[in-house]
Image (tube, rainbow, N blue to C red):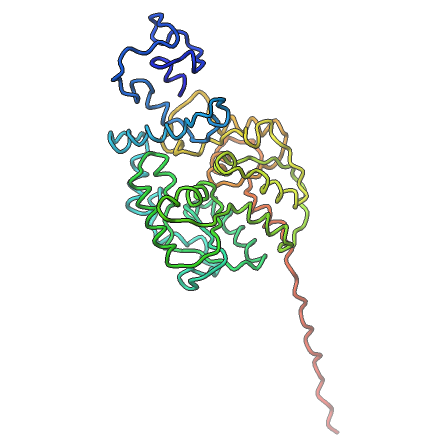
Amino acid sequence: MVVGLAGGTDAKFAGSPYPSLDGKGKPLGEHGGNPHQPIVNGLVDAETLWSCTTCRACVEECPMMIEHVDAIVDMRRHLTLEKGATPNKGAEVLDNLIATDNPGGFAPGGRMNWAADLNLTLLSEKKTVDVLFWVGDGAFDMRNQRTLRAFVKVLKAAGVDFAVLGLEERDSGDVARRLGDEATFQTLARRNIQTLSRYSVQRIVTCDPHSFHVLKNEYGAFGGDYQVQHHSTFMAELVRSGALNLSQHKGASVTYHDPCYLGRYNGEYEAPREVLRALGIEIREMQRSGFRSRCCGGGGGAPITDIPGRQRIPDMRMDDIRETAAELVAVGCPQCTAMLEGVVEPRPLIKDIAELVADALIEEVIPSTPAPAKREPAEVH
């Protein structure tokens, strides 16, 4: 974005590598000459805005602590709400959110199909519960359903008092806000807050860092103040309390990919690693990990706007992974799972942390009661 602005702003201060973007020998730092020139498609190309994954790596690295991502989302809002210029599948996704409360346009009645055989408690039946499991739109994705089922297995093994919203749950609004549709985001947020106001929950736990961030940090502006946890943080608590009987991980070497919305947005780097260590896993850290972790490319609606580049971001991240020679990648985000599994094989296996924990659970074997000995009938003389 800084390079995109260099033609009309103080490029020398921004450190632009381009001494003359207009080919006219304009000195570094000289204004473009038209103070009324629009920012979008004037100073910044629209494709620059739509290619952003909102990962905040630029914010993390910026020595001036500039909040680039907030500015990008603001400019997207102008394009979406005033110009109706959301590229590629953006408009379709936003229409789906309005019509079906999910970005994929799936029938809302199918939101609980993934759990048809799990006998889950609905919050509407119980009213008060310790943990509300916020399922998210991964409920409609066959790959992510495996993660959801694994986490339910963990919750049940730990004896957690939990419930789900079922058909009352809607999209959190994350995608709408990142794509600049503030109106749809606020509509979804207010409806979810209204639904939650009817119940009493101690905390909300979700496997999706994007939903986690929105519920924890963005619903408060509309009166929705909740204690929200990512499932890795909650599982770390279960491990520390001894609520889970776990075996040690055997086999594949493991590296861990930090989700941007869990790490850079919310500062949670340790809990996922604590859970992996509890499984006996020695993590092969990538060179770019923690707060400098490379994005998977799945945030900010980037897969929806689908702006082409010289190299796909998940391919770049997979190069980081291959350098560790790990055979398995532990993740904690449905977007990260989808993006990394979309890389052409051969590549390491991708598993959510919940799947690894579920695989390591030692199920208690209830001893069977021996059947009473069969008595032979007495002989009658």
